[in-house]
Amino acid sequence: MAIPSSNDSSLFGEINITPLTDIFLVLLIIFMVGAAVAIESAAHVGLPQGKAQAANEPPQNVIVELTGERRILVDGHEVGLNDLEPVLHNVLENLHTRVVIFKGDPSVILGDMVIVLDIAKRAGAQQLGVAVSDTDSAGAAPVQAPSPAP
Image (cartoon, rainbow, N blue to C red; front, side):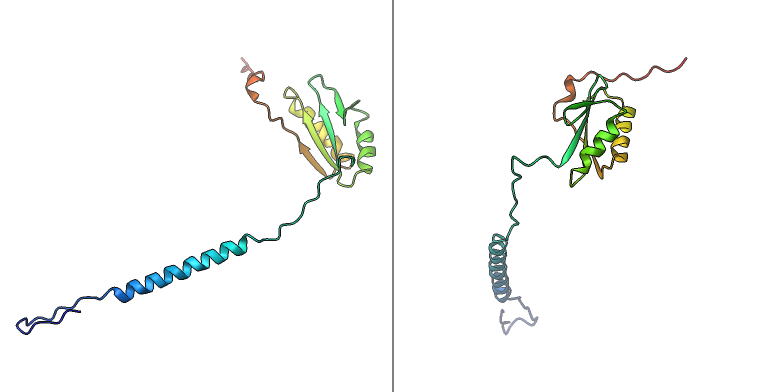
């Protein structure tokens, strides 16, 4: 703080920022130590151990495939539409999870997919899934819009 001279009649004061700087440095050190402790304690989290499914265990779901030729396959075995519900019922009785995954050809009509999924639900499926392919759809044939009625 400046000391006013005897010939200066006005009082002029300056703020000393040294204590303020000391406080900021102490707070900076406290936050740095706190962050280091938080990161160190977060690094030692006890993660749950996952069990890999044994290769000899059967899958816990049923895959129903509808081909472009309107053939229905249940786990790779061809089934008729009239026999689909009893076959799915027998397969789902032996499963714990009762999950049915629908795998359809891109040319399958949506109504056919809904019929197959409805039959799967009536057969006792608790969960329904739709499998998608990860291939690029650029090679697929374009879908043409219906022409307007005259």
